[in-house]
Image (cartoon, rainbow, N blue to C red):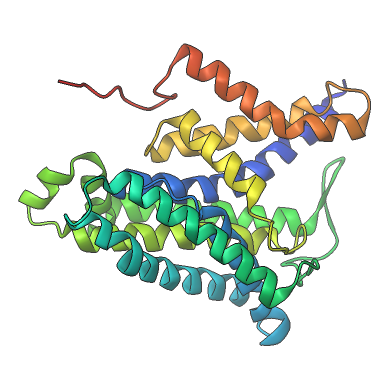
Length: 300
């Protein structure tokens, strides 16, 4: 294999990892703060794609403002979902809030998927990309829409990490994620942080969907495969771990990218691509059940 081919696969893996990381970070933040396994995460991803499509195609916004529109719209929806559906389960009225939250988010997933089918139909939509044409990087020619979308994703991830580290709201999210009771004792409003976390997680999922919409097509079922990979990444990196989600996304992207060149037949290689992450997940869990950066829970 030539050095150019290796660099091409590495770059493709990094581009895919940026999209995976956005969706996985949303899952990690929601689980870390609320301990909710959000089965509707893929549908939030899908709604982000449709929000971008409507903003660019129907409202005539520039693509970058379409991304911003999708992010804000999904953040508002995430806050509403937490307030109406998740918070009542955790206010003491439910005996087993974790089980009820799973059923609620699963039902929400089915509702949103069927609603999208009814409103938009099953036909694929292709919104305007952030950048048209190709970009030459030495001997490599990279699709401009993918490279631009990945660049935006990297910038957003960097802003998220800075916000979690240096802002009061970010430190509150980290505090509640690490120890909910101790954070409440020190005056952190756990309820407000929970709403912020769900809104942030939904915004990240919606942004990932908006960035991927121009690269692929926007369809009601577009979030199924990405959310499965997001779950693989979150478990691979360690449940609720932000650095673990980023490292897991980078590993999965590279494994999928280089895995496709191991099989000579391109059609078979692409068919097996989605299975590489599951094989990697099983291998990691056999060696380290808590994930790469997860911690073991002590039970009394």
